[in-house]
Length: 173
Length: 187
Image (tube, rainbow over the protein chains, first blue to last red):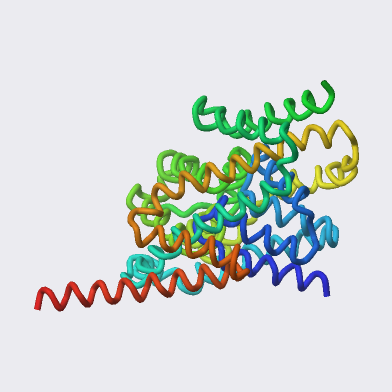
């Protein structure tokens, strides 16, 4: 059933996301495309919308996908699925967490996971970039966005707004 | 220590959820201001410990922080109240624009706009990965994990979860052997 599938998919995403924020993008992308719930374009649009509205990317994505696939109840199931692993971990092992997170074995695991997540993100950049950066226009806008972000230190919302305007200008001029 | 009412916990986390653009990490200073400085519900040390723990377990940072702080202050009800409050603003906003977004698909102007936006999003993701790499890739062996994952996906078509699992296990094994070497040396 679709509601259960939504719950289980976002449960999986919540359970295997390490590092928060953009670290979960590769995983969400993989799952959404595999289920055929979102096209790459739609997925990237949601990331953009998430940047411009309050709240976490993952929750915004879960809300949108749930709604698109199964309406309001879809949203409830996908969002609850995303939260459920954290709820279980925190309430059951809350008392042990202080010791747990300082344990040498856990620290060791993180030393492997952190650079691995960087690898996942870079693969996501390549696979998403190939699909959504279209033509010379797209490449030029990407370069401008990088300069605005890295050199001008513009806020991501500003970078998104300017890129959108450039997209319209390049298409109609 | 005084106890916070569930209603107050709800409104506090709702405020934090409403005003944080860019997700989890952006919320941390706001939570600190509200709960440590203004309300005095947590000490600075407790807060730092909480932030360390929520980053060390899987999940969304915003969800983990609100759950853990709510749980610490008011038990399981507190955890549920806080997580609902922090997620509600984004859920309501996305629900109210979801239909609009779906309807606008195929509109030429919107397509042109998003064509530009999509290029920017790829750059934002790249930049997030680049910033993360400065903390995550600290030596040659951590670089091997990164390259291993890139090869694992592009060449061997492995699932991201499998690779994260591998990386964690190998990281653990490496840390055991390192500790052992250290102990052997000091013997």
